[in-house]
Image (tube, rainbow, N blue to C red):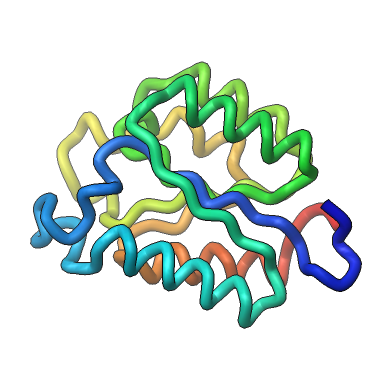
Length: 152
């Protein structure tokens, strides 16, 4: 995708269970629905002149294919790997191939939760991590890409 006139391309990728936002443990993940999250990403992207595409899957292989697609499109990535955060070395290896900005996001703060959530295998290959601000974590990630992207 050309960056002239259309804005930088950003893939907002979401892992398992994020399609259940609003009904899944709202005391942890908030009351916003997945549709609310998509709308927030689209409107924030438009405000920042970014071309944003938001996707969600329960499938690790599909998430990896989308990362490869983003790499091939020279797009930046905002990713909430969800449970894959803690153990998916395949996801980590796919993200390590990215030459653009990669921002890991989480709705809750994994460091303040169960011990198994404290480790992120993708953090070391991400440009940065934003966590604990609910769906606003995504807005902050897009703003970071809009201001501080590493390529483009």
